[in-house]
Image (cartoon, rainbow, N blue to C red; front, side, top):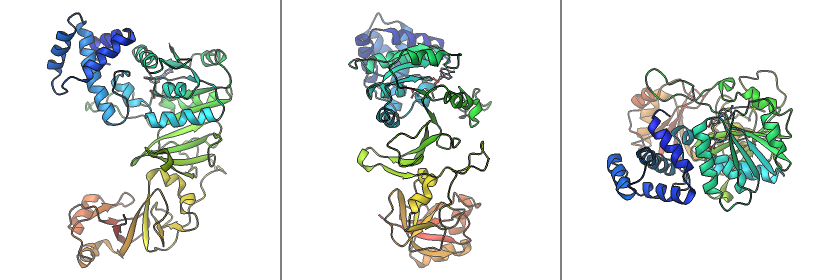
Length: 426
Ligand SMILES: C[S@@+](CC[C@H](N)C(=O)[O-])C[C@H]1O[C@@H](n2cnc3c(N)ncnc32)[C@H](O)[C@@H]1O
């Protein structure tokens, strides 16, 4: 965090006894959002003795918490606090609870959360009945984490404790695990931010090399030989080595993470699976997944993917949710196939498979004839889906000459020469 005053105010706020802290945060959250100066003066008139650094920190909290709550990332009711980076890196509550309930159902009684951040995962572990020790290297973040766990777990029997330490210190995790009721799981959610800001001033990009995560993936891997249960969080693009079980998780239109486990939790369909989460737990969709070769593990790995079957176009074209790109063979089952081995688009005689956006196939035509074909079908607007194509969206948009739309789409699928003109099935 760059602003010393906000940092010291944040620490001060985190150390403020819970009832007073909650009252301050609740007041800050109810202030008008557009004018930070007016917010500071309202807080000052309401709390004349409030340290100016705490006032600034409260206004920053208001902005961060309301933005986070809007995105479904954090509860903005005066219990939680955050840092800008902490919010960016925190697990989604829905995902944290899924991980915690899978570990609890596997018989885990305690967790050492080695990289606690603002405590979203630790909170979920404790809520699911497990004892928790949270470790956080950054001193300010560990203060915020401690404040969050005190505030949100006040009625839990064994609230989590937080220590400010580097989880890679030799023997630290082992000695912490010994203080907890067995079986104990070690959970690691490495930081993946680039360490420096790009020179153009834009945000630091997430680090793609697992050895540059903090702690590095080799540290997470090494924990397997010391602990019975190890779990980790990795980005949705991550493919762990075959020794790990994992679940790729989708929320709304995105793959949000790869949850990694040293052994598949009993509730898993298979060692690797992909799940599309929903606000209604009864509507979650899971398929067993194929583990594609990880670029970092290029050996011929016997557990790697069985390719999904490929075959001719049928009446319907399906766009599986991105998380099911790992599950194409299971998702296709016996009733569908991919349109080409290089494509994720599937086709079937019936639009019935779940977790797929379905379209009715109108025509398959060369790109140069798309405009005429659209005209013949009376289409005046189309979405263009060309992620698998070498042609750019703007090139295709210009060649078809129609504006963006929802009902019809042009699909340029990997490996197919022709473009597909389709109509959305509702
Ligand atoms: C991705 S965030 C964790 C987010 C957390 N799971 C949550 O949901 O709130 C990673 C955190 O690990 C901390 N960290 C990085 N390396 C660490 C290490 N060697 N020991 C302890 N904490 C570390 C970072 O400071 C950061 O707060």
